[in-house]
Length: 195
Image (cartoon, rainbow, N blue to C red; front, side, top):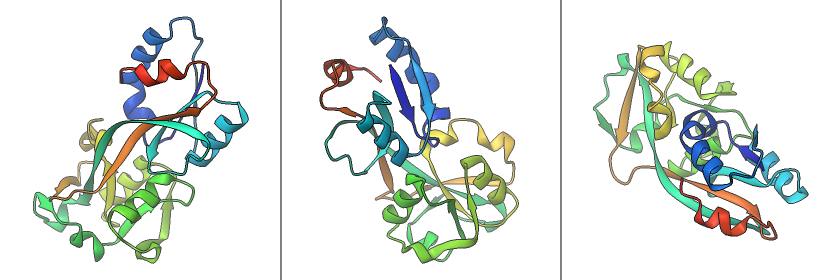
């Protein structure tokens, strides 16, 4: 079974869900590939991957999906900003917002969730990973939004000058789910997989 996972999910969700996938499909030889949403979808359509673990919303025309759960975003800001523990979406509007580069769906999800036009993003820097974004926030270059699963990875030890703030309701969210070809013989297994 060939599984594609996006980089903003893979390091945080794979360690907990892989044992369940292995138990649910004991006869399968798992092969995992980390890639962008666009590439994963293309490979699933072409038959080069069987299953994708993605963040939604995303256009999955001609494919089947199963949403597993909603995940909130949190704000990562330099401690020097002295923000309240809970912040509003409006507080992001005037901030120096650091995002992943074009091609990462997390960038689009953040801009959409915060109702920000693309020009609101910081233009001097685009990152390839959440760790790079956090390193820049740690040095005081701006703020960023992170998926909640990322903060459970003990980031504050690695980035001591970053403070995590929850959003007041309604908090921005993304959905985490599975995607596969409608003709995949494991379809029923994907529908009943407990992740």
